[in-house]
Image 1 (cartoon, rainbow over the protein chains, first blue to last red):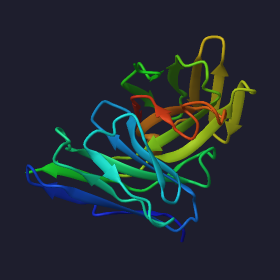
Image 2: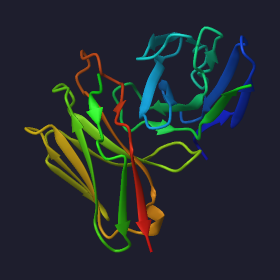
Image 3: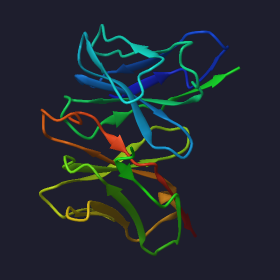
Length: 113
Length: 117
């Protein structure tokens, strides 16, 4: 079955540590996205990538970094510079940047210890 | 600046009745709109979409209406079922490849729908 896999489901981080969230897709999609969801708020775009080796900042990129070395993979690193990292993180993909809908993974919940 | 707004945080409906979820947008460049359904601790699932060249799109129990002049869209669910209980997000984007929102979805805050048996 094709889909988007995010791991782990739950992640804990100590203050001052960087942590990387995994996102893998086997849909052969060119475009991939990272969103953050906070209670009472919609999904906010962190970073997106339209093609391998290229990515752009979304609306709330500060304190985050990404890479896109392979078409299938778009990992998100939450750095210690992100002041409020506790949230639900969602990865999505689409066939190409202009294609909708975007398909989502099941998310990773990050908590600070 | 919230470009897509869902002003009702929650909605409670009796099973079998109609559920109407509303969404307003401010960016006139948006020309494609989607509704997603989300259960707790899961990713959103696409429900239905509409292009700005239409004012209505129907798929089974789900119908989306678009009023471009009012910059308003709504999702109707008829009849509502207990399994429809979830958070519903509307999202907007532009098909203009030169636009800043191209390839990006802007989401509303979500509306929690509860359908009572």
